[in-house]
Image 1 (cartoon, helix red, strand yellow):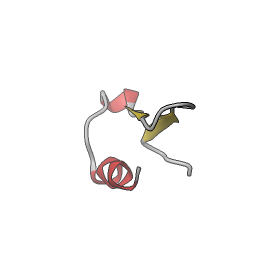
Image 2 (image 1 turned 120 degrees about the vertical axis):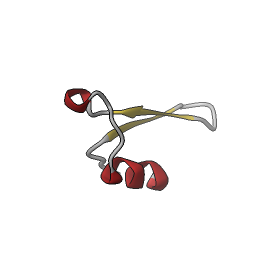
Image 3 (image 1 turned 90 degrees about the vertical axis):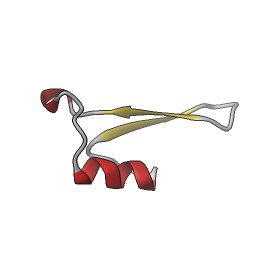
Image 4 (image 1 turned 30 degrees about the horizontal axis):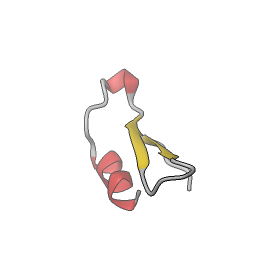
Length: 41
């Protein structure tokens, strides 16, 4: 799935994922869109 505000990296052999915030111009401040994407990821 494509996200605008986050980057999701899934580990190949483990049941874990890394979620990175991707709003460098806003210093990764939370907004409604970012929080919705986090809930979906």
